[in-house]
Image 1: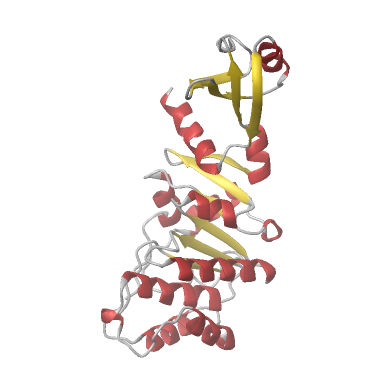
Image 2: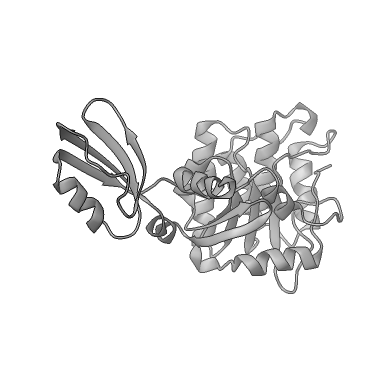
Length: 279
């Protein structure tokens, strides 16, 4: 059977309310920290069975794909998809047929012969074909090859165009960065940040690299400058937060020959949060 755990109504309502998920914001994400992501998606122990959540949660219908998909071993892929369609709120059958072709899934084989990737395809096809207003996807590309990952991303884009919200948990931060407009960061089971990617970058450090001649610039006591790192000869990297004026004054006193800056990647921001927790 498809192994899933449903959160209680109260647990899921609390999670959704704290997240402020809005369809117009497009895909969203919660990072996993080894505890937070799992507890968030699993919630309190509840019922089993089904690819979709119970029909409504005070008007909210959703489809859920777990990180570890287990199917009924004796049923074929087609039989599994049909069963899941019957227990859910409905299925867009033409779109489901298109997804089967897109993901190159042989639905005539029994589930016991499926690889991890093929089991994942069954779950994703059922979820996307449900057209549920909220899709909750936990490590959705597990077992998929790069081509199938690209097709999955296309499905997420289609869901967005269709007015659906995608709530995505992934340890692949590049995937998150490519797909999501809003990001939620979990630390020790608590939601510590919910914002857009652009705002998240704005609130965090800028990465600066310089090249110089002669003595290295003295930056250790400059306001806003952190993580000063000597690279190879005549090059240095540091992070900058807040106003750049103090750093620029310090650099003007040295023989700087080149300067470049960039926004932090999502991975760097993510690691910042966990570094703060350890300090």
